[in-house]
Length: 268
Image (cartoon, rainbow, N blue to C red):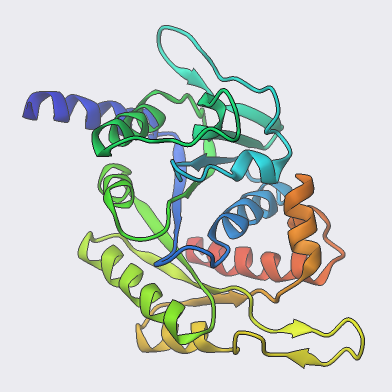
């Protein structure tokens, strides 16, 4: 059993060897916009000329293809040696559980071992080639899938997504401690849904408070990567399959650029 486990890990390490940076995007709870952040980070990095892959291992809610506009009639291809990721554009490749489902309405009713098996395949069999970044969209929480990914991806680093209210911040702290217990460096915290500019009067409205993510980052001694406002255009862009980060003129897109720049500073 241990020998088989070692073989799986060796295969994963070899497959990911040509990827410079492996970033897992995680959250302590659902509903904080984790996938939106993951997709837009990948998009923003690819627009800066980086070769990027995005791996969607949110097994029960694989929404990455929908947000990239590649969710219809796409099936993955494979040969005897590897699985081929879907190419969105020259600099961006994708792999997702959604590509294995015959219908987007089909639920994944799997126990842990089956989920771990497909995660191992995604990690060990997908031929990403050379990448500057692999962005991994984890399911919310700190369960089996997150644990498996964190333990098996060599050199993985974490980006924690939270919203400003206290309930979300409690769970984001758990995510930081989860990463630390696994010796996975935390690149920083992203505060999503941080205020909203009123479309009528232009004043900022703190719907879910503001500044909580930054405060948590200071208290946990991790970097604050930036805040993202509530913006209806972000929702529309995700639903239409055209991530907001692809439109560099919009304020929300500029906010993602700031976050990317803060992540890239780690390399300096």
